[in-house]
Image 1 (tube, one colour):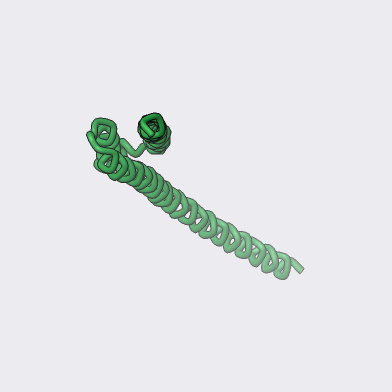
Image 2 (tube, rainbow, N blue to C red):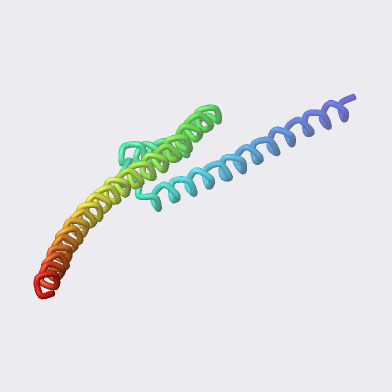
Length: 143
């Protein structure tokens, strides 16, 4: 009976230790995933376009790493990941909007140039028509 109880306690202790190792390993994987997302956000220039969210993500990750309880680690880690994704999305949106403004300005310039060329063409056509009319008039009077 004593042997069975000792064996049972030893099995429970081993399971707890294995569970803790798995949890720490799971957190390491989670933290690596968040760190990767923060790097992706930084490559999208989140530090420039979404600095608040980007810094929040980094702070939350640091908080998750130092949190004493697993539940706190998990909550802070999930928030850090979400903030990093948000920072990336905001940065991409801001860059796309800036690009759209630049393209609109370029389009306006191109349209203005096209209008100038159109007016120039009309002027040249009018001059040509006048010359043709003068030529026809001169040919008529010479005959």
